[in-house]
Image 1: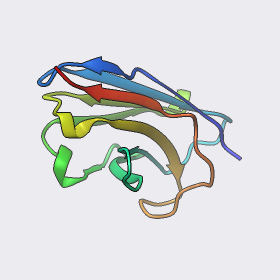
Image 2: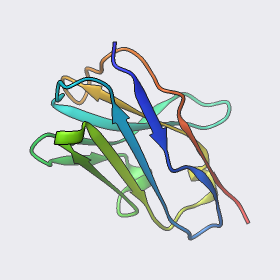
Image 3: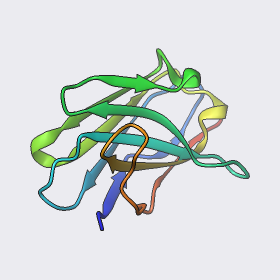
Image 4: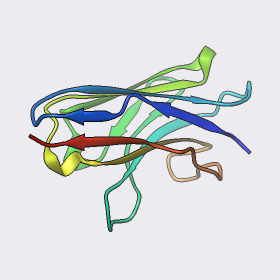
Amino acid sequence: QVQYVESGGGLVQPGGSLRLSCTASGSRVFSFMGWFRQAPGKERVLVAVIATDGATGYADPVKGRFTISRENDKNTVHLQMSSLKPEDTAAYYCRVGLSATTWVNGWGQGTQVTVSS
């Protein structure tokens, strides 16, 4: 089972920026890496995904504001978040996958992002 270490969360004012990072354990490079988020009382949802060739996809609420990137040699994925809104407040988790819809079981501890004035 893959283990994850997420970091970079914190408290930020609306309009601010944060950069999240996540490293997956092991030496296998998975085809896809993604960021999910879970707001209080809501389901965990996929917000951004990136393939090994750099192709990316974003959920509509974050398009144009979030940028996902990865370092294949380090099994690391980043999420640059800009123009943050209060509705971006959530715990953020990363995951590796075989496709954009087939994810390897397991979750890390997540990193909390709170957007508030």
